[in-house]
Amino acid sequence: MQAFDFTSDDLQLNRAGKISERQHARLQAGKSVDLAGLSGGVFIVGVIVVVVLGLCSWMLNLRVILESQAPLLAIVTVIIVVIALLMAYANWVGARERKNTGNFGSALVTEGTVSLRVLQRVTGDECFMKIGYDEFEIPTSAFNLLQQTAATSHYRVYYDSQTQSVLSVEILHS
Image 1 (cartoon, rainbow, N blue to C red):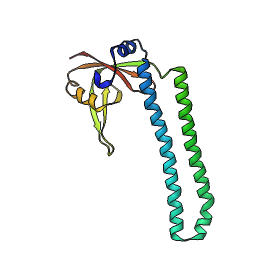
Image 2: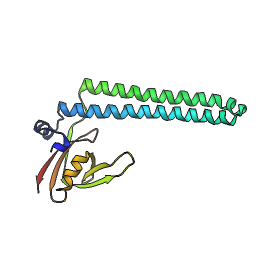
Image 3: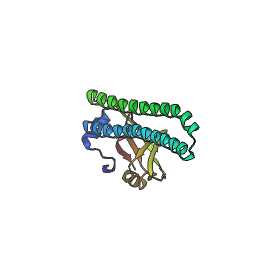
Image 4: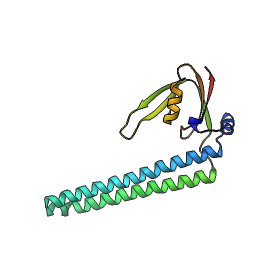
C-alpha cells in the first residue's frame, strides 16, 4: 500500500521481524523532530512566562513586587533553561545512539479487522486505525484508502516495537 510508504523489500523484512534501513531512516527523522520540537517548546513557554511576569510587574510599577520577584524570576529562568538544555541533550544522545546501533526495535505484528477514527484538532485532523487493542496514528491518505475496505477486510499490520509506528500493511482477505 503506497499510502503507508513501504516497499516489497520492507514488507519481506517486516515479515521476518526486522526493520529495513529505509524504515529506520524514516523513524529516526520523525523521532528527532518530535524531541527537538518538545525541547524548543519548553524553552519558548518558559521565556513567555518570565517575560509576562516581568511585564506585569513593570506595568504595575510596583518596585517592591519587582524587587521581591527578581530572585524568583531568576530561579524560574534558570530551571527552564536547564530543562530545555537537558531535553536537547537527551535528543542528541538518543539520535547518536540510534545512528550507532541502528536499533529502533523489532517489527511486531497484529492482525484483524480495522476500525478507523479521526481526532479533529485546530492544527489539523489526526487519523487512527485500531486492530484489537492496538491503535496506530496513520497518514490521511492511508485513512482514506482504508475507509473503502476496512469493514470487509482482514489486515496484518507490522509496526515498530518501540515507537508504535506502522511499518507495513497486508490485506489478508476481503
